[in-house]
Length: 448
Length: 100
Image 1: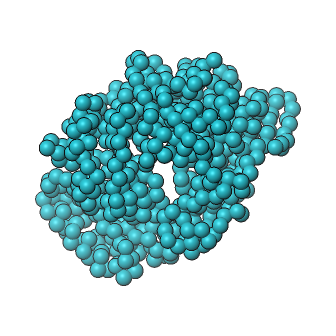
Image 2: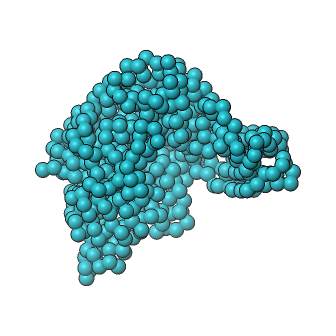
Image 3: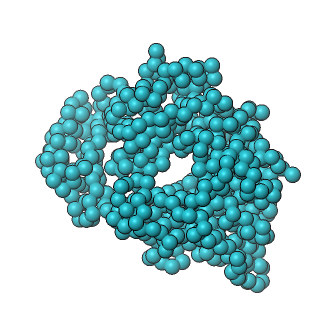
């Protein structure tokens, strides 16, 4: 009784076509779309404040329109966190699309991750030494739910399970627990299942995406890169592969890179369901673009759940201008000094970057002088109007700065910061709402 | 020799903490990486980036190393003033390291 789970999105902006390919050709039982980054939910919460029915993934409608007919035709269940700040509104939107396409469909919406009302404002977040209440105006607080929250939805006959904040790999672990009937105290099985989820959650990052390089790391046909799926047995042993004929590459190297992605201590990877030990994992190439993953393990789950708190962090002001020719860098440096003198009083943390030389590594490791350099200035301010000053001063370099600066651009962005804290899991109550549309009639109701 | 000649890497971020995997192309080079790419050497190589401690984890099962670098992302993705707020490009910075 093997189980097959596909990864159809690894972030909210991911490509949609590879999910269609998986549905058509991978003989899936489940498709998972992971679309919620750390800050995404705070941004979604802001949209919800402006409009009650909003607050779910901006690409939900586009994705569902493309995927729903295939999901139903192939009898594949969808698990996704595209509900973001409003899973119930997202479920209603999905049913609206189902009705339009005249397809019967049942959706389960999982809520309970929104813990804004239970948030301890006096708690010190991981990122600073000040209590949360002093970090700015709070927008949202969402706990990372685990498998338990999803199981009642999976035990129903819902075609689609839509959630807000759930630990990314738990979206993949839940179907395994449900399908194989694993105990929630069988921590070695949960650990292995979580490893498989972790490997799948970033879509093509395991099938050659974000891996390719000229040196030693050629990846064929990135244009048509295929997303991964796992074929899993009752012990959790998984083979990661992709649809034949798609681009990309799955081998020991791509799997190892993804295994360690965003991991700190590999023996203590904390999730809501299990503390996973990645160091026991064994990998083996068992065919072309097929890697077997086994022996992941774990120990008892933590009593607390992680909470992401979104807050208003002021306004980011940015300005850029380019210089070219043999003395490009010198002129960019002169411009940078002018900006510092003019802006430092209002922006003590003003940042000056030389794009093309040292902007992303904050230094450089070879001594070459670039032919062209783009100067970037950036700073934060509580006031939007003050944040504009940075772009204005960069633009003013046209007439008032060194020779031949060009292509000035300015921008102000409202910034949402994220803080992390913990909440006792007893305080978090997940609920599932079922809603369905059947050709010719409509039924809806809330349970649990 | 530069690290990129024998190994590959991927960067990850959590808050202000940067993680960097280091994986030899050929498993026989794992011991050499363990010997040469110490946490101190990484901290020194990335002195313009890493303000805090560097901790190294070894995964002999899959022949890979994992470096966790504290205070390395100018405050973290959501409020950093950096161009690359996630520090995603920093795997390339690690691979520029010279070893004997």
